[in-house]
Image (cartoon, rainbow, N blue to C red; front, side):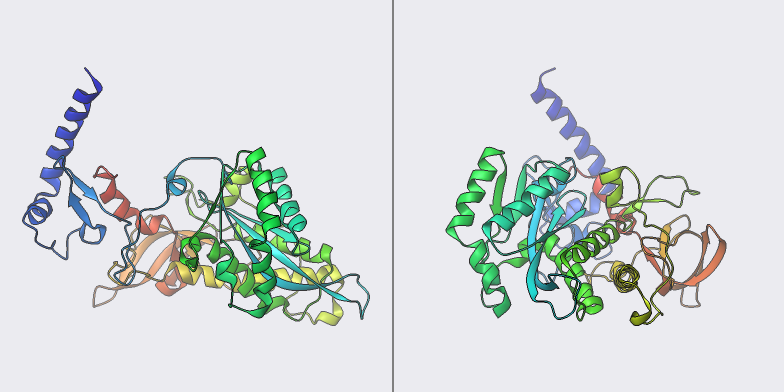
Length: 400
């Protein structure tokens, strides 16, 4: 059979299956009528194509009725970590030249590099706002993570007028010298560099979130601290490990397996773990050595960011989307205080306890320490498992 004949046969099978599963939805679309609100396709913007096949339009989620574009190809194409990268700057931060008091403070910046595929994060400290400093940070990244195929970044105009402190950064990113050196570096290494449209930071949402996570909590735990360059670099790398330890989805379908896939699995083949250490968060700074103070800051960062991440998992960004359905055998994260950095409490729901109004507010969770009852406000569904029901619906369709 020719390829064209095989395609026709495949389309015929698809139409047959879709006609039996989504008969009412197809009839409504052909009659130009809105779908039933209870339809599993209502939030997916479906349409009938020229082959009379039901397809999904745009992104699954919409925000404030704004029609979102399809995900970029690099976000849905299999590739090694950091082959497709988003990069952004944040800062300035102030460090001292030496450990002694009354030393001169100097400004440094941080480059946040985010893998577009697995959302792993790399933090590079940039010692100064020069073309050489920018290229040096890029060379360090390439030496550790390999040559990327494409790099996406802000074009610099989004920094203009945002804050006086960012004027220097704007001037660097728009300097002719940087553009010449970047062209040499990317052309010689066959790297494509894409700039997002001016005044459109939402196009860089993937790495903007990482910048926010780093900068927001860093300033709250270390705003009044003055690191040396070595201390700042160490702290940044430890924060990078924390961000890359976040669970994404369950690692297997075994209901007894409490492990989850993290960005770290794509980088080292296993979850990232920290060295065991004492809890320093309640000890005054004047009783701690320099390294103990660093550990305390890391623990404070973890305490703040961990809570925000778990709360963020339960926020419904689409008001029309249903709440995550809590069922037996669902793997969840458990919110508990005083957990060490990079240690996530996970469990499997063994029973649900709906109230008189049929709403589930309490669940029984099996953990490695036994069964525990927890209110639903103290658990969070893994990011991927949150969409299992929608994924099953989409798998029935032939998606563009």
